[in-house]
Amino acid sequence: MTDDRLNLLSEPLELKCGIRLKNRLVKAPMSDSLGDGTGNPTDEQIELYRRWHDGGAALSLIGEVQVDRRYPEKPGNLALDAVDDETMFRRLAAVPDGSGAHIWPQLGHAGALSYPPVSTPVGPSALDIEGLQCAEMSTDELEALPGRFAVAAANACRVGFTGVQIHAAHGFLLSQFLSPLFNRRVDRYGGSIEARAGLLIAVVDEVRRVVGPDVAVAVKINATDELEGGLTEADALVALEMVDRHGVDLIEISGGTYFPGAPSSSDRGSTSGPYYGHFANKARSVAGAAIMVTGGVKTRSHALELRSGGADLVGLARTMVLDPELPKAWLGGGGDPTFPSFPSTVPGGVTAWYTMRLEAIARGHEAAFQATPQEALATYDRRDESRVERWRARTDNQAHD
Ligand SMILES: Cc1cc2nc3c(=O)[nH]c(=O)nc-3n(C[C@H](O)[C@H](O)[C@H](O)COP(=O)(O)O)c2cc1C
Image 1 (cartoon, rainbow, N blue to C red):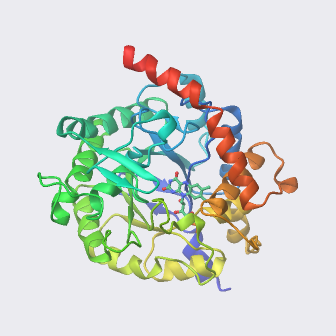
Image 2: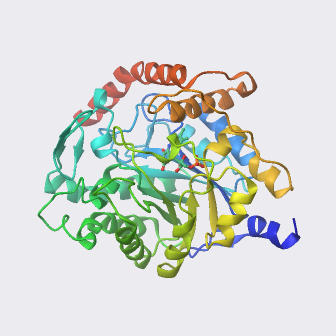
């Protein structure tokens, strides 16, 4: 490989807010479900982020950090609607310790995909389909949302994070608003893509207002929901352009949803290369923010392909679970990880396998990690069930505060 090609991955990038990313490899957000069951970080989680930091990622995004603990994706999530254990949050935010790398929480609200044992799911419109029921969000609740994201973003800054990402992808609340399949509202938050993106824009504005110009504000958005009647690429481009006009620093592009029976990016096994590489140039043509493309990057050649195709940053999820030191390896000319092949799986099984391997990395046991997707899913489900009472008790306390 010529030096020029390696530079595509190793050269730094300055974001509009002034933050400098030391290379082009980003650990994409993954819900590690290693919280303490009441929304606070644990030693294991801090160790996991230390491994990725030491592995050379310029930026690591913490998946699924909730802005309203009544609507989590899982009860192992972090929550920043209030900071209960400031010491632990500060320790997590301090992992980079002046090294020039960054860690940002991905702020979200699971909406219709909130974990039912601790939640009464809500979405833009009421839904009653197999495996998924939710009530319609009231206008008051919806209009309180930008403020909730802002509180969480302000808390993130206070404990030392240098940026935040707003989660508007994968079928969680803000992504449901973007999708005509799930957003049937007839008020000003439904209808055209400009209207469906209105809530996301209000969130971006309010977050920027509280964090100021020097903190990074990123958005994760789908290029497509991969669902008939869902968000299309044409509409995604309009939403992306709107988000960009409102001054975000980085836009992460992904796709798919976690709706029951629908394809998700993390459960997919294709070896054909980056899933959304073709969208990078389109995004580049309408946005001035840094464009990060995530999904399907298994080899250094895939990463270079994305960079050559218009992506400023390469998002890596499962590769970073197989090898937490991957950025160091790739920047040093080293090799690609070996992907596991699963003779049989169940919906959610592959994602659960990677989630349980995260726990093994956090404990330093990954070399001994072995499970089928079915076994991983069963362990993963049991772990969440064991946290239900604690999460509920903490959420009830907040309701009575
Ligand atoms: C275990 C696991 C958990 C994930 N959790 C999140 C999450 O919390 N937020 C998010 O935006 N994406 C999440 N994803 C999706 C990834 O960020 C990424 O978009 C997807 O896995 C495709 O990238 P990959 O091919 O590099 O794995 C998760 C993926 C995995 C494997």
